Length: 114
Image (cartoon, rainbow, N blue to C red; front, side, top):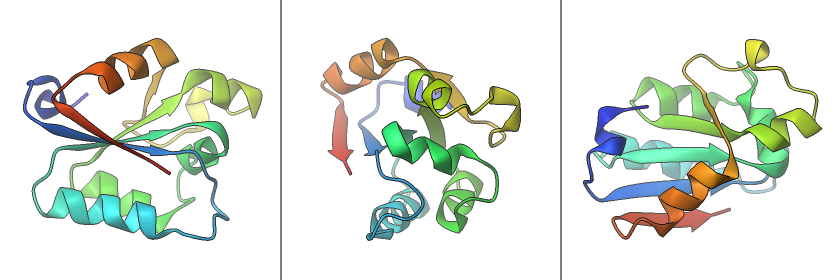
């Protein structure tokens, strides 16, 4: 996980619960914009959004990671969809909802859920 995410500075947690065929991919493009403009951002994939954890599944997420965004995915959602950690994007952090709850409850974190 990025040191910036852990540092206590104000951060942005973006939660993507929709998959590759969501009508509005603008959410992921907005995530790219946030990291390009210097915002410390973590994009968390959950529910159908975990299908985006597969390498090459979404060019916006490719750019998000390239520009320094941190990407994480829900371990339970991955298991439900039969996705193995070995077949996931490099540098993806697989976490449980207990970790996510800590992020959400942190007063320095702003949360946007899609």
